[in-house]
Length: 328
Image (cartoon, rainbow, N blue to C red; front, side, top):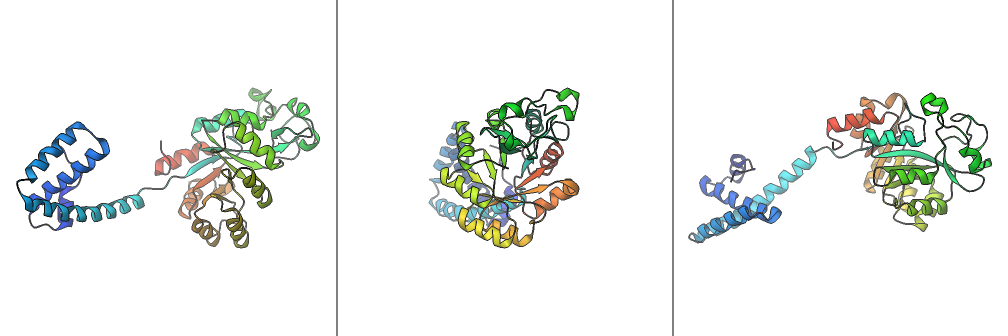
């Protein structure tokens, strides 16, 4: 059986005088591990043969017991070293989907975010005058559609009649403003959603997310009051308030115990990051504009980011994979 351990280093570490015995005992220990982990017949058979050989020398069991203790210490040290050497995983968040080449907050942008390997796409939720949840970053439809007016003062049918793609090019003509339900439905089983709540009630958000089986696959960016309302309705949902300041993050931690805390450029400060980490919360930071590049991504990671929101998801995903922060 070919060994998978660096035996010479192990034996040197253990400082056994009888190196032959040590190497054989280490091999026996390895078989115990492999047999228990993989339960393969070949390993079990070899284990039996080695154990029978050991029965003819009672002193070897004492040596093996002492060796096992040393190996346990060595394994612990090795595991700690390996865990430190392995980069932690960092999630890539596509801001408004992949919107540099697709109309923002639309199904094509979300599909492209999935294609390039993002872990989440971010979307913005608003409520129409007749109570429907639709996606729009701006309070008005003017910038991204061929219409005019406030989302909150328009009916769903009025918004649905707009073209949300024409301003991104002829090939996107006819693209509709999506509903929150449509985004949840297309994401399920494929990608997570970073929900930026612009104007929506806690009840509507919790109901729609739960109805689509996405409760474990969203993070919800909201203020403290709305976050508390969401938690009261469904404690397992991950609310993600903005850290903002030392005083704010302390209050957030005390009142919400969040699993994730959001950061922008203004609050990405060591003292706030430290408080978040001490509370065992992941930190997701925006990296848009000049910092949305390898140097900015790496500095964010070095300073503790567990997730990065970007306007360049394809490039970020590629970078994270090359550096080992994201699995292929």
